[in-house]
Length: 389
Image: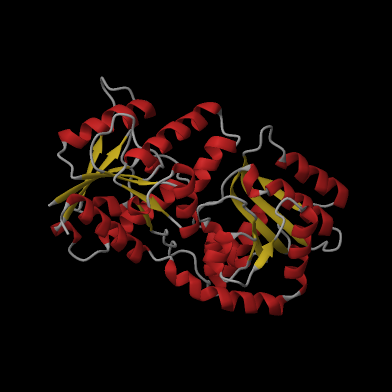
């Protein structure tokens, strides 16, 4: 029996990027026939074990490892307790999905590492304590982990360059797509759900959408300025911006208010709250386009999720976008230029035939982002590291 530890603190409480992908990974593991006869996954939590149905599977052994005499501090949990549990629980390997290797870890490890985290650590606007942790412990992962998992070829190339990682210690394993993202039937349930969501967000007709954490590298400021340039020409089109403002200081609410004042209507709907995961596929299906113009990303799931829903995306024209979506797309050459972004948004509103063509060209690329394939590649790496293959 191969015993693999997994750091699962990101599953606790409200889930964001790592938490969502980790949940999908664990669901993918239990779909492997007979997985419990070969592996035991020991899941480590800081404060609580979530109630997800998939966690009840016999392949998982779940442990809360702080509390009592051990402080429920992330640093204690991550850098002291987890390295100790490797030996106490007689693990064969540890999987760390949160980009870092603990300070005192001395066992075998696979670490997810991304180029955008490197960028945030060295050039971003995160508080200094987070940037310092990422600088130090991502570097430690790059130096010490047995294998590093990148989620795109572009990201792997960037990581190999900035950390000088040999190719033999890096493998590319793209995330899969959550099954809830698909082209939904336009039935009565869909119509009622959309009507309720539009009422909730005060959307009257057509709309663009942006979601996620609005780091400056994701160009939300420029996207809002771009929409301001076309908002008067399209009085029935709105822009739903459901993003946490990560600018320092925050700027998005102010820009949205200015655009609405200039247009004399609720042209931009800005909410700093994340859209509920079960609502997002409906809004993705209904939107004219997703706007996600990130200049630095490791993969960027939202445009793939939009594509699975039959919706195009406005994206930065870079090596990653071309790797994922091929040669056809609504690409922006200069992500810092609101005028070029506005031109691309305008093209989506005016040329529906072009949208269909681009979606048809991009659709085959979705096959590469499958959780069963992802899990299979990851299990093969665990086998190799532990000597089981």
